Amino acid sequence: MCGPLTGIRVLDLGQYIAGPSAGQTLADLGADVLKVESLSGDQARAIGTFGEAMVHAYNRDKRSIALDLRHHEARVILHKLLAESDVLVQNFRHGSAERLGIGPDELSRRYPRLVYASVTGFGTNGPSSARPGLDIAAQAEFGLMHANGEADGEPQRLGLPVADVTAANALATGILAALYQRTSTGRGAHVQTSLMEATLSMQAFNWGEYALTGRAPRRKGNGQALAAPAADIVTVADGKIVLSAYTTEKWSALCTLIDRPEMIDDPRFVDNPARVAHRPELLAALSEAFGAMTRAQAIERLLSAQIVCGAVRSFDDIAEDKDVVASEILVDVAATDGDGSYTSPGLAFTLDGRRRTTSVAAPLVGQHTVAVLSELGYTDNEVADLLDSRAAGASAVHRRSPKRIPS
Picture 1: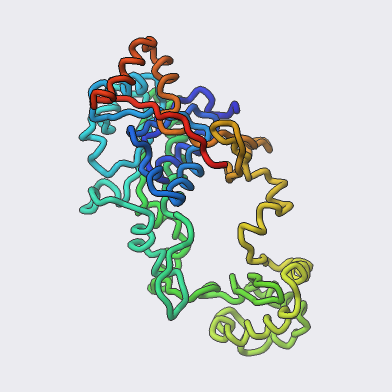
Picture 2: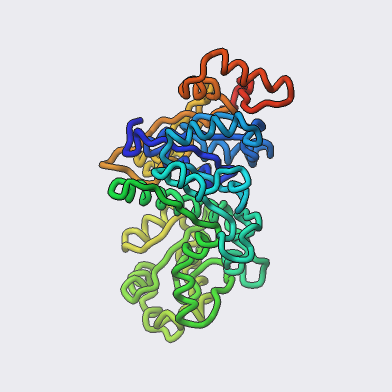
């Protein structure tokens, strides 16, 4: 698909999620994204369904070339690619790129127009700069787990790799800013983020609460700590719903809706602090009012009063949702061999109402090695020599035999 980044070449050296997800955003915007992998591939490929989900989710519409960067021949190939590229993305442990001779300082000297984008676990300036960073470590160390879970229960991780994905979004935003800046300066830039910075940035609201009150956000399960009803769960006949009506106007509308107008001026519920202090009694009244309804019936009634609400649903309920279908957010992804397909969430925004609606699955390891080498000017014989060198145990490049990717 032609997009705003058509003509931009991206080298994606990322592993797992944070790097590849940023590259995926650029691919969805039309960039030619070349996934540069080791001979065994992105490390996520070797950890079963958990890893395959990462590969499929964050590597659509990319091409793959497999290079062993410990070999001189592979580094020569990489530098030929760099000479023709606009962006390099990597999420190596801090210092690893420098040991391979592809650190940001060296590459900015050799390729001044290159946008060099890197994401680490804990940043590059502090004492933990060389520490490996994974999503769960960021969730634990920077406040998410402490604030998530039941009040009397264990800290809980969020059920998605939120630090990785937020860092990837930050990195993609920085890359776009650097590309725009390059149009006026003629020079690239080094874009850096970390799981630490992304995790703190996403919690700006919680940090604001902490700054105002001097109290760290605490675990309390569902519901907002300082407002009620706010993100509170109510059990209904066929499941659960969530609702918020904490402003004076919405609280009055909710009380009227459930035929309990006396609750408006009840001292237990007269303002937010009172409702927070008496949340159990508040939720009991709401459960009594909505408990015999289905989720659909309860949502319909609440929406009639313009009260924010939602049914608590699983993925099983979502794929056929009329709003989801109308948005075209779920992209049809064709398997690499053309046999079968699956769906995957695409870009979270449209441009002039348009969004890519079809895609191609993540490539096999080194699937496009031969084609990319040919594009770089290597002859058929040179390509054959590079590929055959693996038989002598000195492989610099590798093309894996095709195999079907599950659809």
